[in-house]
Image 1 (cartoon, rainbow, N blue to C red):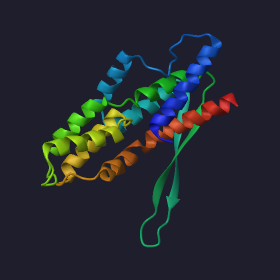
Image 2: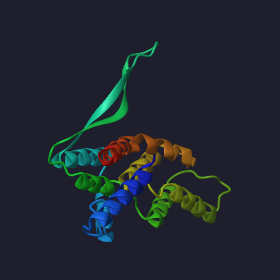
Image 3: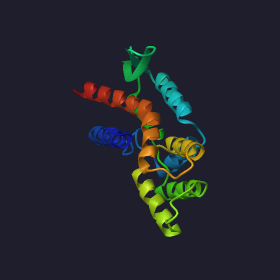
Length: 204
């Protein structure tokens, strides 16, 4: 399940719950347009590692404790290493899952697609692109890429773009962007899965 799908399922669930109980129509997991804009501004100025740490810290403040799980691998021709396997979750008696979901949703905010297109095109201009590609073709390629990235959290989008900019001479295929995205989104994705699964368990 992707971050965007988790975001949708969590916030949809909260909206349903709040309508049933008669509490305010905008639940904690849903942001106003102004809050979304502020969240994106913050993400743009931070690295994925910083945001992941901030989300875990916010969770602790609201009585939700996530501990990383790992698995040790023992390859025949090398040293052993740890593989990240998600998070275990514990709740304090006075936990506040609504505020935790809110922190997660703020950490999932993507940039407007139009801004992604502009950033991609600017980066493309710094690299070698196909010789037979016209400016119109380049703009269309960036538009297609941005559409595929429309759900990427802003910090992860910029982190991936910066990596591509310094590591690639030629403009890469989308799969290269997505490879870096999956690496950097994994922990946040697992945080969201842990929270969503706990919400389902509480309601069952």
